[in-house]
Amino acid sequence: MSITVFVTLEVDEAILSHIDYVDIDAISAVLNSIENAKNRFIDTISTFPEAGAKFTANAQFLAFDGYVFVYDFDRENNQVNVLDIFFPGQNWR
Image 1: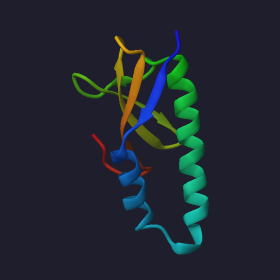
Image 2: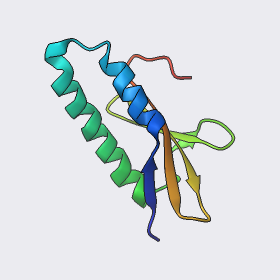
Image 3: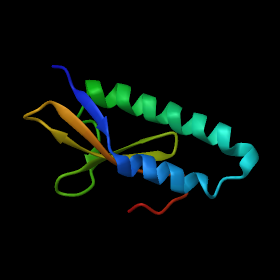
């Protein structure tokens, strides 16, 4: 089974909003950390799309390196839609 993973614009917007609060000297390191966590998440979820815990009726979540990814799995289309990302220390529940 081949799973397609789509990252929504809301995820990109959340990352850009988060960067506003990062010290200018740390932006590169933070972006690398986010990218590494996102890649690990995508690698895992494309193989095990139901690996996450229930978040809402239609969404699941999975954490990597302190980042929490919220997604839904469309079984009919073999597609995962990454809906949001929450950052270490952020209240996401």
